[in-house]
Length: 266
Image (tube, rainbow, N blue to C red):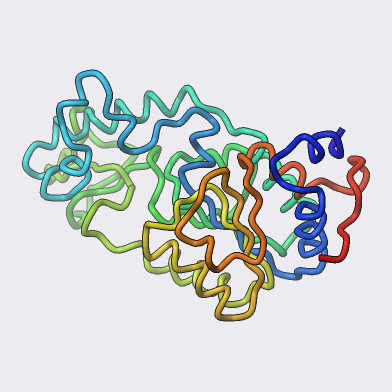
């Protein structure tokens, strides 16, 4: 079954076998995923989510602290709209393949994602480094008072603290904000220490996340791009798999007992 998929894919069997060999050799694997992985689960991209009523607004204007403070109710409704769209999505075969490989090879994979949808976690991946936060979670807009409790916020658009009026906001990274420091430090370390990096479904245009592939390359790791489209990171790739991730990852990460050929010399 696996070999038939390889033969009918747009990536050569030799390329698949080569990457599988590298996976077998790497003691440390770092995976960076982007919007393309989520799109294969039907998750609208940031801008595609602005449909219908929301199409008259620029998403960028609602993804900033300035915009939120100007009209918190309006921006909160935008994020509730996005959450409703996300509720219809489920992990695809690419998400599941990554989670399965990590379970079979404990301690070898670090999964870093630019996506905020939580689908990697739903698929069973643990300790995911979510560089841009998680859409399903909230945090406080201002410094917390002693009574600020996420579980007991007063319902509203948006919910707020009964004691000080502090507002909840989505726990995502907005324009002009820095990535979460501890999460970014772990991602940088993973890029520096891995022997192989898979860059999956990302255009390579959003920094600093895209810079992780260049960090890995500078530290002599092999870099594999999995993307049916050209990306801005193709120039640093040792191998490119021009396939959707939901098809490519089950092939690349399949166990020998799944019927695929073992990795061959590149």
